[in-house]
Image (tube, rainbow, N blue to C red; front, side):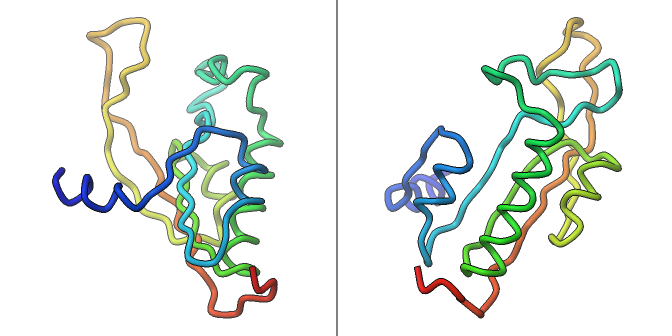
Length: 132
């Protein structure tokens, strides 16, 4: 925790739409995205807390802009989401790692189980084509 606190002194944390974040990101930035998670099933959809909602098209657009930031601008991007067939397809160009997490959103507190969370890392390319 102390290590994180020390590193966080040099960080800027924002809560905004991804287009704004990526437009402000520059070489040397690292972007972490925690979008409303893709549903684990057709009946499990916890994206209602996201204002106007966060559609599957939004999920795909985020994956695309993240990959382009890494490959075209040299900005590494980490995205967390549920580990599903859809998210694996969306993040196919990233390094994928799975961690077990206990969900805190549930109608039944005693029914909270560990689920697989996907961490998708789009590594920065050495070729910075935009010089930004």
